[in-house]
Length: 619
Image (tube, rainbow, N blue to C red; front, top):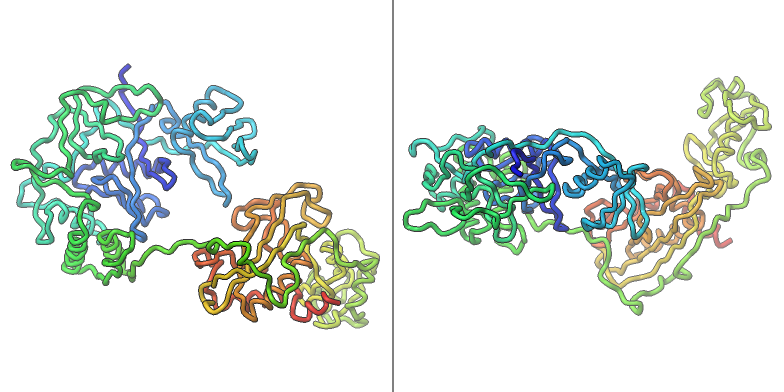
C-alpha cells in the first residue's frame, strides 16, 4: 500500500539511549526551518518557541542538539509515524513524576498506549515493547510490575505534529544553490545570535579563518520531482541533509512507526557525504564541528570572536580552551561568544558534578564519635508526658489578667475586653477570661489558648502564637524510625582539617496515628535511608547532640505534603535543614556553606532545643 502522508516528529537521544520527542510546537518550529531551506541558516534556536529550551540550538548539518551553557551535544533525528497514530491526532500520553510534573512517554510507547485505548481495552501490558509496566485505563494509573508502585497517567490533546503529504520537500544540503556568487547569503535576522550562527557555518564551509567567502554551488542536486528521504542518524549514518534520492512516492513501513532506513533505498541512489574528502571536481562540503582537530577548532573560535568584534558585538575571553575539559574547545568558544553577545560574563570550566555520597568506606574505617554515646537511636510513637487536662497544662504558664487592655486577641481577632470569638468545640473555661503568658508577656483569651492547645499535639507544651516562645518541652509527630551516626575518614568541602560525621535516617512507610493529619490512612516514606553530613568539629558535634535531642522529641520529620513533589501523606523534613550532598553544593544542600552550622543551631532553638536541652534529656 502506498502512503500519501506521514507525521514528522523530531526527537533527541537522552543519556539512557531513549529517543525522546520534542513537543508538537517545537517540532513545527524545527520543520519550518527545514522547509525554509538555506536562508534559515541551518540552525534552529529552540528558545524562540519554548523559553524553557533557551540554552539549546540544533545544528541540522550534524544533526546534533547543542547546549550553550555546558557544551553538551546530543543526537537528534527526524522520525516518521503513521498519520492515524497518536502524534497524527494530537494525543499525548504522560506520566506523573516524583516532583508532581507530567512527562510525555516515548513516542513508540505513547502510540502503543493510544492504540489499546482506542480498542477500548481495560489495560495494556507494555512488557512486549521493553517496559515492565501496566497501564490501567480504568484508574488511569501506571503500575510497575516488579515493585507494584503506581503513578498517575493522563491523556491530553495538543497540536497535531507536522504532516508531510504527497511528494516531500527536497532534503537539501547546506548551503544549496545560492544566488550569484558575488552576493553572500542573507542571515534570517540581524540579532547577534543569528549573525554568529551564520558566520560560524560560513567559516566551516570555507575551511579557513580568513574573510568569509560566498558558498559554492552544488552540482549534484536532485532533479525536480525527486523525493528525498532522510535516513535516521546513528553510528555511521549520514546527516539529514545528504543527497540520497529516490524516485516516486513513499512506501509504507510494516508498523505504525515508519522509519526510513538507508539500506532500504532503491538501487541507483546517488550519495554524496558532506564529510567525505572532496574529489578533484567536487565542491567544498560543510564539515561538522566534531570532525575538526583541536588546533582548527580553536582557530575557528578565535575567528568568530574577530567577526563579532568587527561587527560591534561585545566579547570576553573564554577560559579552559586548552584544558582537559570534556567540553570541546570550539563548542566552549562558541558558547562563550553567544553568551557574551547577550552581554553576559563568561568563564567556562568543567561542568560541576553532583556528589551525594563519599567514597566507599569499609566497616573497619567507621568509628564512633567521641563524646557521643552509642551509634544509633530509635523512636516509637510514645508521646511526652501529658497534663490531665488542657486547663491544667495552661495553668502552669499563664497569669490571669483582671483588667485586660483594649486590644485584639491575635488568635480570634476579637477585643480582649469582649468574649472570645472562637466558634469551635467549647472548652470548659469561660470565654471572657484573659491570661498573660509568664515569660513573653503576650495576652490572649484563655478560651482561645485552650482551643489552640486542643488542636495541636497535646504533649504538655505550649508555643506562643506571636513570638514563638516555647513553654514546656515541645515534641512532634515524627513517625517511628532509626537514626544512625558515626565518623568516616573523609573531609567535607570547606572543612579540610577534620573528618565527617555521617547521619543515616531510616523511616519505613506505615499507618498514620491519631496525632497525624489523616489518622488510619497510610503514609509513604520516599528517599530513605537519607544520608546527611556534618563536619567533625567542635560545633559540628554540638549540632549532632542537639539533633539527637530533636530526634528523641520527634521533631526532625513530620507527615504532610511535600513541597518538592506535591505528594500528600508522606514523610517530610520538619524545618530543621540537613546537608545531603557530601562533595558538592549544586542543590544548596551541600558544602561549602560557612553559615550552615549557625543556621541549623538557630532552627533547633526555634524548636525549643538548645544546650540546656541536653542536660534536660539526661535528667
